[in-house]
Length: 280
Ligand code: NAP
Image 1 (cartoon, rainbow, N blue to C red):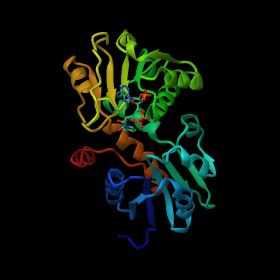
Image 2: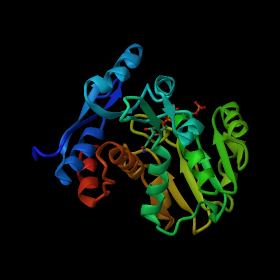
Image 3: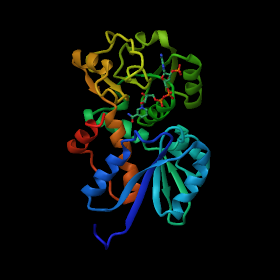
Image 4: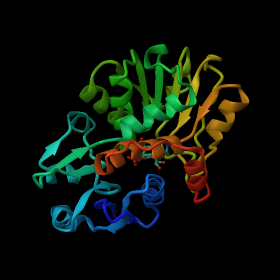
């Protein structure tokens, strides 16, 4: 520890939160950059979220991450919400400002796009139509991210069609809602397929979809990271398609949050990826 450097605290509020990989990620970067600080687990019950967030300043925290179930409720508890987070409708990062007020951000959109760019640096959102499976919380950040990056057509398939329609109405063009039964036809001519449903996750039912209609240049991404190699990604690789797992999104969303609190944009190194992979 360098006594000349300030000690910086951050953490993740969730309920439950014990499973979070965020302490391993952020504490790795604290060590890597020779900083004084610590990133801790903050188990906070939903009814205590307001008290906990107001306590950040008094406890000397630079800020915190928010995970399930706090991402939406926390928006009403900060003093300022970043416009991108406002569009997404959720915050995952809180920064205590120098005047003591709280600013809310959402870094999931950045994390998702960066995971695609890490896999294919020349990836472009406007390379062709995109099919997104799922219309839950994670889909919101991904839809906003893809639309902001210039996607021209997003085909959104969800089991509950009304949820997909509501998102298409809220976000507008280029999103078009399609019934779940049409997910295979939706792949026709697509440059990117994204699974944001929980199907294929450990303990959940399989995602049933044939990739036959995908063109050979298409990319397939699954934001699930347990398991890392989902059946969807294995099927994509078997066809010679570029497949992107969900760990890249998880690791990349942490980078801008770390920069907000510690003033350094950390890198996603193979060493960090291997360390987190070993915990999955
Ligand atoms: P969520 O809000 O609960 O949404 C779940 C989605 O899955 C909904 O669209 C739901 O459809 C669909 N679904 C669930 N069971 C289904 C079934 N049997 N058949 C068809 N569709 C089904 O969850 P979320 O927060 O968006 O998270 C979704 C997944 O993303 C989880 O696996 C989570 O671990 C992962 N995730 C990863 C990251 C990352 O950083 N890599 C970040 C966030 C989330 P209905 O609308 O019809 O219910």
